[in-house]
Image (tube, rainbow, N blue to C red; front, side, top):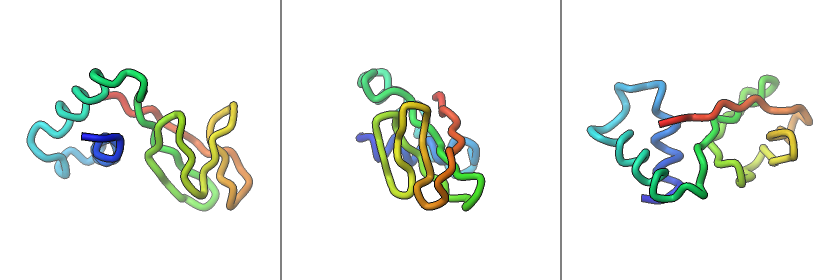
Length: 86
């Protein structure tokens, strides 16, 4: 299981009906085995409503990581983020 699989699971945490059996536990085990990953964050721009699930060292358009969180480069506004804990 890679970061991508953990990211996908984190995106489904609030929709428990979408989770497969033991999916959350498997993702949590991967994060425990790889503490350098950290917990994923759901990043959302309040202006354009774009949403991504990212780790603290990742950039993915339209979001760019800054020293104070993520910036939505499309809107040039600071994006909100919520850490997902398993």
